[in-house]
Image (cartoon, rainbow, N blue to C red; front, side, top):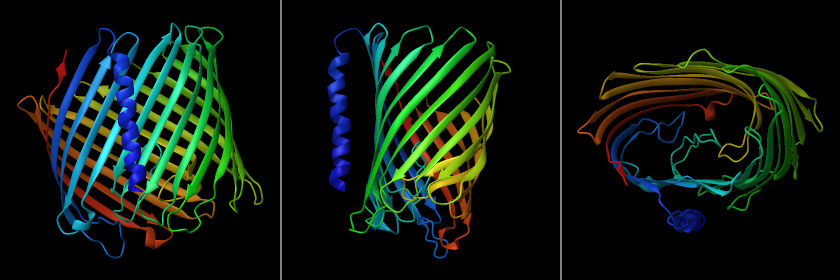
Length: 425
């Protein structure tokens, strides 16, 4: 397992070294930001156990670097930070986390652009909130996650594009009782505007997912799938547009898991009330057509309001519909969900910022099992002596489900001292 994680880190570095000579052939703008942070953390339930809560103090030290190199025809952005973690009581959990991101684009021809992104994570943290996962873990065993994407985009009109690409996602767990997995996802999308008011988006993709376990037991079923969709967009004004769309998603499993297709229709509305306020609304209806059992239906929705003001910003939103969870520590499969979230950021004075946010989500799986999740955090950040900052953060998480063994309540307090400085040339 560690070999795989090390290989991914090496691959991340080799890609960077390969791209770096490409951007040293002409005049470029360089931005380099070294940084370091040291934190003291208290967590009152490090294993997210409902019946036997164990608390601990942790000290973390995290140096890091951000590099940006750009010109008219290409750009490279690299961010990397290892984090040394020392536990006070449960020293067996001591580890070194790694987090890195890479973004690169290159104009190959006048209207042809190559894009590459990659994200690497090595961690033992139980909360895994990424673009690929929202699951939790009940151990502090290390896991590795890598997600990459490469694409070619051709622009054949002022707003008309066609894109071909490939995404790859990998998850490796040191906990042998959890699934490892990879997902391959080639895709294509087209955006075409008939005129300044009417546009059409088309997309399609193929998914190939494979899973395994190191303890020799059976992992979750592999599957393949297809996805296709279309969306018609109409601009009422420069600041207002509406849309109507339809998507179909298929899942074909190798084992006993039931195959299904999902058909969904949706409408959407977006409006910029002013330069500081934006509103978006959407709704839809989906049908899950199962191979053996009866069909499932439901409504989907999304709504968000964003407001910027002189000293900060405020966002509030709600989402609901269907979701899938396969490449996670918790393999929940197809679920229906309802959620809401909000966040406030405010500058009390020039060097003192505050923030607060919270979310609620209710999930229901195909067996009608329900669980509810609450998240929240708040904090203060003080900047001083130009390059230094001191922050205090409190976070809260709770799950309440039909099976009490999966419930948890967690409180965490973190005090962090950071320093960073930007160099340009």
